[in-house]
Image (tube, rainbow, N blue to C red):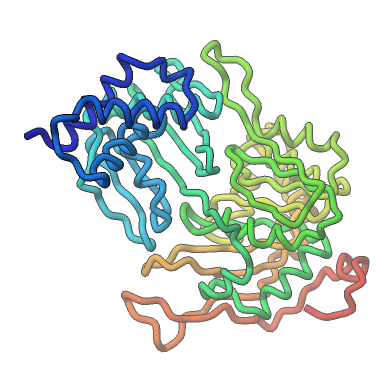
Length: 410
């Protein structure tokens, strides 16, 4: 008696032999698979459930992503990490675990990779072994092929949330309080330029998505990302731009820097950059300094101070020879607020600090911490307990609040 895996492969080969599946719609392909199952196993008893299961698996192998389909459709999975065809890891509830399943061989994994990349109109091969792309549902995908990867193809998928992240959810998760959320709403509406920083997996894009929905719905907003993830739902006049890798000939690349320059010609009221990580930082800061207030972005850094250092480095990569003092003055005048996020030892994600960039003095950028996360007496080695507390410092630069009509003290 043959097992389900063999039955699936048998039907898959029969369908490929008898149908021009590329010309069939999804419904027609499903009908063709059902006919093949009935013909192939007409002398074998199979329950309707088993037939449906085999049909789903065959369809997934031909039109879908095979083994990945069931993983991606599991809403509890937030991240998928494939280290070669035999090693698949997933993140659920903040915990990473290894799956028992694996791809049949490296060729099957490569076929899935080509499907993923092809769906977004991109290419990945030995000449172009690294690519960032996305799935049809918006999930972010990074692919690295041999010879860059030494242990076979590497695929990392950051799942796309079907429900946009909201401030209310961040409050429920304990990342911020209702009072802090109200302050952030005022800062966003009053067009303060805000940078969100943190380490990998700290929730930067999630947080950016949440506060982006505080942008007034009547403004023209341009979002710029490596792979589109932001879900801004309340803005009608929204333009979403995405970078593009070079083709196999090494030409045709469109970078974040290119997109920022182009966005400035689109009459934006705000520019939202998913992540600044290189020379484009200079263009972003210049945009903030030339009338595009209310811009939002994220960056990798371990503190607010570290974010400033990273910005200095990024700007200098795009403008060698620019005096450091000029760079620091540019940063100090462009960035208003830095929000630092962190993934703590118990894997919880917390807002660690909300800091005002207070100005530039004696060669240093001055910071004015407004909120700081402090652990309380209930914290342990395994579980972090604490809250984001207000410091005694008041917001120094209140001009934007006054222009926006807010007569309050933060």
